[in-house]
Image 1 (cartoon, rainbow, N blue to C red):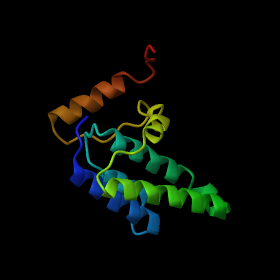
Image 2: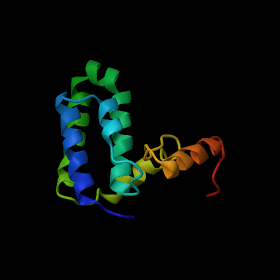
Image 3: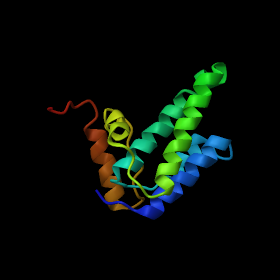
Image 4: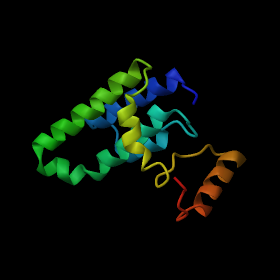
Amino acid sequence: MSVNKEDRVFVAKLLRSVRIGNCGVREALMQYPRDTDDESLIAVYHALIHYEADEDLRRRDALYREEQDDYIESLSYILEKGEDLPQNIIDNYKKYYDTVPILHKKDIRGFLKSFFKILNIGRKKDK
């Protein structure tokens, strides 16, 4: 796993921008570092997807909204310092890794990664 502190700081800023409403989740995901293998950034990518998926629940439940906003903010503080997320957070999102791919670079390697990802949909991995 390669760690790029600049990418972590950039993602921390994206998280804060989403958190305060200056940027939508989809816009943040489109700006996300491509082809990262940094487990902390991959976990945060999935946290953002869950944040967007829970938008309706956040609107109806102020306590849930506050807890989720605090969680996103805490992730941003960790990344801003260039630190790894706690392993339990990373492990919690691993079950989603195969279903939501991180965007790939717009080159032949990125195309091939996306293409082979599509071919593997529905294939169960041996555990």
